[in-house]
Length: 379
Image (cartoon, rainbow, N blue to C red; front, side, top):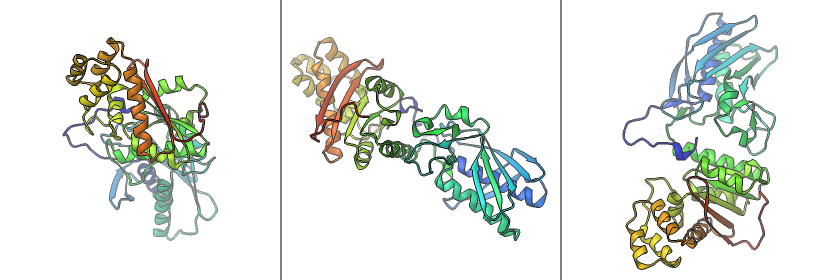
C-alpha cells in the first residue's frame, strides 16, 4: 500500500492483530495435537515472541490416514494488511524420520533472489516464524514423550498467490504467494517500526542484487514516474520508502550504493529541501519563508515572494511559480533536496532529486555529485 493512500488515525485506539507467523504456529499446534490424540482440536494457546500467551480459534480441521490439516483465519486487527482474514493452513504428518521438516505449500512464496533472511529456493517463511513453528512442534512432541518421532509441517495459504499481487513481494523475488512473517507475533496497526523494517529489507535486496543506483519514492504514483524515467533499471532498484527519507539514504549508503534518486511531489520535497528527513504530514510544517527565499533566487518579485509566504500549501506556492514562468524555482528546490540528503547520509554520494506533479509531469530536477564517479543508468 502506498503511504500516499494511508490515512493515519487521530485518536481512536486501534486493535492489534496477529502475524501470519503466529497464525501458522497456532494451526500447527492444533494439527499436531489432533494427530497425536486422534481427537479434534478447536482451540490452542501459543507463546508469542514478545512473551505473551494468546489463544487462537481454529476454523477447520481435516484428517487423513497419516495427517491432520488445520485452518485458522488471520486477524490483522486494524492494520491495513493484505493478509487480513486470510485462511492459513498447517498440515502435519508423520515422516518416519527424526526431526522436523518445515516447508511451504500452495500460496506460500518461494525465495528467488539473495538479500532476504531466507535462502534462495526455500519457502518464504521468515526466521522467527520458523523458530515458532518448529518450537511449538518440539514442545508438543516432548509433552507426549514423542521426541524421537519425526514430523513434516506444510504451511499453505489457499488465496496466497492472489493476495501476493497486492504486495511488493515480486520486487523482493518472492514468487508464488505470500511470506509468513512476524518478529513479535502481534501486528501493530500503522507501525512505524514495521514500515521501516520493510524499507530496510528492500534496500538490502537492492544491495545484494548489485544495484549501483536506486530510486527512492514516497509512494505508488512517484514510483511509477521513477520507472518511466529509468526504464532500463531492474525492479529491485525502485524502493517505496514512504516518509523515511533520511533513514533510507543512510541504509543505502551502508549497502555500498552511492547513487540515489529521490522522486516525489511538492509537499514532501519542500520539507526535504529544508533538511527534514522524516516527511510525515505531522513531522514538520512547511517553511514558506524558505520557499519565498528560493522564489527570490528564481527571480520572483517582492510581491510574488509575499504571495508565496501567504500560501497554505507547497503545491499552491508551486502553482504561483509556474504561472509566473519561473521554472528555475523547481530545479533549485530539487537541488536543495539533493544537498540535504547527501549531507544527512554523511556525504560521498551522488544524489538526484526529481520533482513531479500529481499527474506525474516533470516540474524540476537537481543533482549533486560528491563521488567523482559516473553512476548514470546503472541501476
